[in-house]
Image (cartoon, rainbow over all chains, first blue to last red; front, side, top):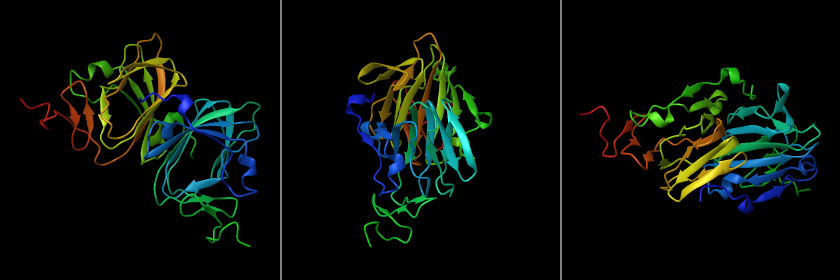
Length: 152
Length: 152
């Protein structure tokens, strides 16, 4: 059944970032629409971002395109070029391999709602612009020298 | 600049289907958001579908996932299982290779607005469920026996 039944959609609140990097993203809530629909070559998430929340740590992807479309509320897109306001109907695209770290921050008074679309590529690495973190093999996060966060 | 400037977005009205298959889709208007943002591994279109319009001929993709999210108005999703109403906030997913021909038809009184996301795969073929047409090499449309539409 192609029409997505929201009762079957997996939600996840917060992030898997190691502390303390998880704190600014603790309130974000993602509904995995693409996964619910059986898609495998790209992902589509419906993100609910409460006031004060960050969509992610500021990052870029080595091999995966990314796209966001704002449905309600407003967010500030922060990237290497500064700050850009996005309201309902605004969108932004982040081509794979462009080292422009970006994230969305909700400085408004209401929960912002936006769609996130992201590619799927086995070789993708996510590089974080402001902190000593990147994605390693699988879903693990490591320091930029490859060491684990739980090492002394 | 990741934020999409709508002044730079290419619009295309109608389809490249050979006549008479183009007629039901003549009013559709697509804004190519992903292309405007430099994305290459998936496409994102903002579709404006006036009353009476069809999003496409009913079709499925051999290698490309597809996803739609309704922003405004309402449409009827028609697939092998029948008709399904989609209003703002509803979405649907069509995994690559599932031979369930689908399209969206606007039977409402106002222009419907929805996002379309589609994968990119060099081997993709689009197979049309109700008419003798498929996509061939490149962007050409051919009959299901591979013959060209302009042949006698």
